[in-house]
Image (cartoon, rainbow, N blue to C red):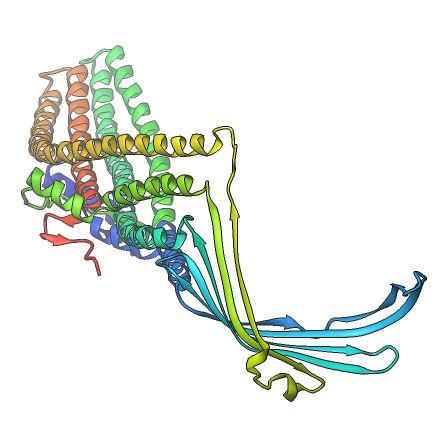
Length: 484
C-alpha cells in the first residue's frame, strides 16, 4: 500500500473518532512484555525455578533441628508374669518425655551424612511410688555412609546448576515468544483495520459508480444488466463493510486480551514500514544460538541425566551402609546428674548393613541395559534435534533476505495497482471501459495491499523468531541474555 494512500485512510478513520489512541508495533510489544498474562506466567515460572534452585542448594547446608515428645502420657493395665508363673494385671501410669537437638551435615563427595546430637529423656512412674529418672546423651557424633551406592548429591551438583541456567535463558526466550505472539496479533488487528478501510473505500466508490450508472440508465446510455451488476456490487460492498467491522472488533478484543489491556478506549495501529537494515551471517547466528539458547544447555543436561540413570541402575545391585557413632551418656534421679560426663559411660555403635541379591533372575542386568539403551536413544534424539535446530536457524536467516525483497516488490506492486485502478476508474467514468474491467482493477488493488501487509507480517515474525532462537538482536548488535 502506498504511503500517501495509507495516510489518507488512517486520517479518514481518525477523523470519525474522538480521543483515539495510536499504537506502533513497539508499543504493543512493550505492553505485552510488561502486563500480558503470558508475560506474568513467564515471570512466575522464573521465580518458581529460582526457589527450586535455592531448595537444591539448601540440601548441602547443615541443618539444625529440634524434635521430641513432650510429654508422652500413658495410663493402662499391663500383664505381668510373676516368678511362680502367675499372671497378674497391674495398673500403670507413666510419662515418658524426650527432647533431641541435632546438627546434620550432608557429605556431597561421598553421599553420606555426619551429625552431632544431644538428647535428654525423662521418665516418671506416677502409679505406686513416685519415681523420676533422667537419661541424657551429652554429645553424640554419628556417621552414616553408603558404600558402593549411588551418590545422588554428587549428580545433583552436576545437573541442577545446568537446570537453573537453562531456566534463566528459557525466561528470556519466553519473553521473546511473547513479542512474537504480539506481532501476530498486531498484524491480525492491522489486517482487520486495513480491510475495513478498504471495504469503506470500496463502498464509497461503488455508491458513486451506482449513481453514475443509474443516471446513464435513465438517459438510455447503459443497459439494465450493467445497472444490476453495479447494484449487486454495491450490496456486496455493504456486506463486506459489516463483516470487516465485526472482524475488527474480534481482533481488537483478542489483542486487548493478549496484552492485558482492560481499557475500552478505541485505538488504531500504525503500519510498521521502517524495516531495520542489518546483515545476518548464518555462521554468527548459529554461534549465538549455541552460546545463548536454553536448548543447548538442555542438551548437556539431558546427556548427564541419561548417564545418571545408567549409574543409578548399576549401583542399585549392592546396597551397603556403614553407620558408626560415639558419644557420652549418663542417667540419674535429677536433671543435673544425667549431664555429668563420665568416661566410663560412653556410647559406641558400629554396624554395617548390606543387601546383596544372590539370584535376581537378571532383574538388575535388565535395568542396567534398559538405562544404557535409553541413554543411547537420548543421544540419537539430541543429535537429531541439534541438526534440526541448526537447519531452522539457517533457513530463517535466508528467509529474512527473501522477505526483504518481497516487501520491496509488494510495496511497488501496491503503488502500481493503485495507479492502475485510478486510471481504470477515470476511463470508466468517460465510458472507455466497462464495469467488469473496473472490478478487475479493484480486486487487483485490494490484493496488492493485502500482499504488502502479508510481506510486512512475514518479516517482523521472522525477525522476532530469530531473536528468540539466537537470543541476539542483530539490528542493535546486542545480546538479549548475559550470563551472570
